[in-house]
Length: 308
Image (cartoon, rainbow, N blue to C red; front, side, top):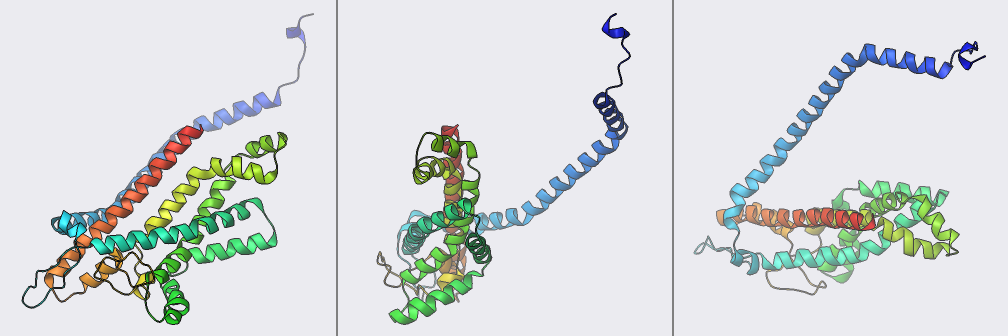
């Protein structure tokens, strides 16, 4: 007797598969229309979101490009007067102050934030959950409160404004952003990498330093540079604490200038030349921020290709 002569029971899996295919064929038209309609809504939302962004960029380029020149970027500012109302000078000290304040803040924030992110990714205790909640709250904290904090605990005891107070304020601003990005990057590392390192007899700390951190580094670098770009554009924390400076100053213990603060001051000036120059200062700041954002993307992509 052959197998075809056997009275085999129907295959429930095959019947279920046929039923699913039948129902899918009946609804394919409706699902296709719904998918295309949803895609169209997403495209319209993307275009609507680009309109204000494109308007801002167009205004910056239209009104600020005429101010950009090498003397404008490299010289010290000049104060207009009734006799020389068009005297502007340059913004070199503001570029210098922005890079110094943001760079030193980054040096403070990165080690602390990476340790917090590593701890949150490795632990699920009540302390870790409480710390994670604190990080979430600090991420949405109004930046002006950080300026008030730095003013109360640094400017007042030191007897005057300084770049150091701005550095501390921006460092506190950066820590939760970098910590959140670091936690996500560390959690994204495959568990098999850790298990392989432990199977070879390495200590957990050695696996973390030699395997986990290098594998998560692209995501961490992206978070670091994005937080740096955000900090460079902040005005509120610096408004109360760094004072003003119209000279070259590498010492953060004294008052310093910054591009965001200079944009704020120029935009409210009584002199038309300074109000026009505010667009050039803003364009310079946006260009620096965009350089850091694109650099973060390129570095992360390169490191991911190297890792793979």
